[in-house]
Length: 156
Length: 225
Image (cartoon, rainbow over all chains, first blue to last red; front, side):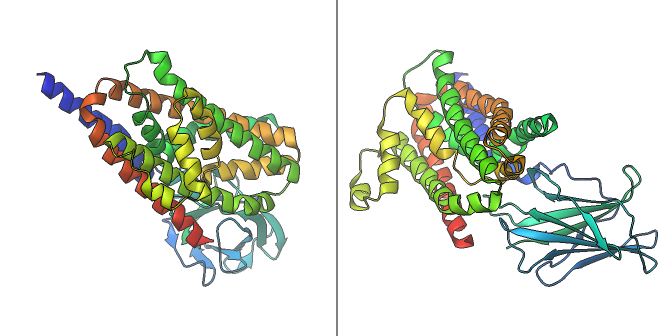
């Protein structure tokens, strides 16, 4: 009986020291903004990411300049059109997160520049785990009724 | 501004369980397993975690203050990058040494003497000390570990535009991470207290493996620069 208890305790130590930390890294999702559309995986290093939503809206997302590296200030660009017409008075919010790791609130402020083009400056931080996959949730419209386009990309 | 502090604290609370245990849990487990073999009362088992986390949060506060004073995350982070990457490697070295010590081969320092770098000297110095107070400087040094979650808070600290608000932002974030890491450390301490003599050598191998992973992670950060 004592040996059985010891085995259980060894398993508990192993669980706490090895399995739980790994599971937390892999399983716990980041609390990102709710995305109405399925995330679009795209290569941000080559060019912009474009998503057409169900209501005729087109949301284009880009990060400049290239290459898109972590720990450097970059300009985040969102271009919004509906049926080809630029949306100039839209409320645009950007939320940056890692799909599998909570990295805190990272939301560059987006301002309208011209012709449906919104820009904001921000920094994508580096995760010590080596994971370089990030997600940008672009919300267009008032809170609660916003159309959210999610883009998944890799940084250098 | 108060909203910023609340957000930093909340980030610490959420990140403590979802991020810190995952990233720093093996480190906490390592120094817990490498602690004294003698049976100790609960307060003595918890004290290393209190001291380690106090050191870690002190370092966060200092960095947050500097970020706030400079007003630029990029400038300060750029200057800190090499130090932080060295600390990431150092963490791996410390864990491997702790693991070797637990496994019973800690007395063989020939390799360290042959590669007598300042990094290894610092690691062996921390490992060799018998004072429980060593956990505070350990926390200070390892508070410099590169961490994406704390970077996000330091960006906010840089945005405060002053030493005090920057320091306070990082301080409340650090305090937010406390419950998770203290609880994690307490669980490890309680479990291992009853098992030390039986699993001691086995856990040494586990700590060495975790140290190798940390070392790999630290070296990878240099490759990313």
